[in-house]
Image (cartoon, rainbow, N blue to C red; front, side):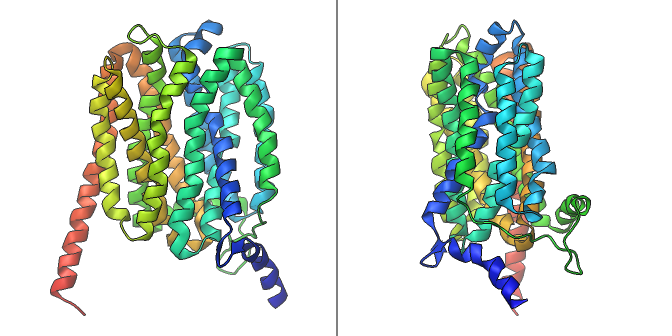
Length: 420
């Protein structure tokens, strides 16, 4: 038994440099997360161009963006829990090869229907980052966990951000299909990267110490949600902000390509660089969470997300206000997200993949709901309607946070009045 324990601990020990997680492994996880998550966002600034090329309506192509988010949510629910059951490195390789094949299918799709079907499968296989983040949390020491998660998430967020820039630039030179050719090639590169990561033994066990079956593994996710009120609160905050993300990014391409701006794909892609504030927030929020500020900063970030839609609404005709609104939106969403992760990962050290599944499945489901709402609201009510709906979601999250804050304050007062 001692020999087996030593073998199981070896990969984690080998991943450490001077007592802390090796920065090279953090870089690999951040880079791999960014390259893969980008697959779900390449189409966002290209909706107008794709609609014209495939002779489809803007609503139909907007649903292609939604299809990728739906696939991502399915992957979170059905695939990410396996990170507690199988070797994550082997699992990542299989996901990347499957995503490579599906991206090639997007390249040759003759119509929006097949494009959407392939987008669902690409989203399904693009949950690599959500397998890597729990791995990073597992490998990191407790006093560096927030920083490590923040760094990996910075890579993931830069992947989201730069994917839109890259897709706009590539499409302007070689057409929108070339974007997915490049994406497919990058999946092969990412396969090489993940082979450099340490293997990870199974942590999913039942009460008798035996490995869980796949069915019991999935059912245990529901059990964990029922037993962890802190996780449920953090799920609520995450859903509130990411729904607004889906609302905004599904329709902004139509606004920027429309009569008010008339921008090209390349210019729309470059505009998304204003969202770099989200990547900055990931590092900042992770470090603050390590110092005990996760609760307070959550309220601040939720309020910023809601306030951003005021500027975004006015930005329909004022590009500077639109840019500031985008920066605040991504700052608020990603700051809330990192704060959430720093709070719920320590709840169940043996079930971090399943904690992530519970949180991220609802997170991306909310994003899909926001995306569908945006695709339906924009044709009927325009950009103003989109911004109203987008602001309602984080406002509801802020109200929920205020209730939690009041409960915590009352508990603190009772504790001060009756010290043990």
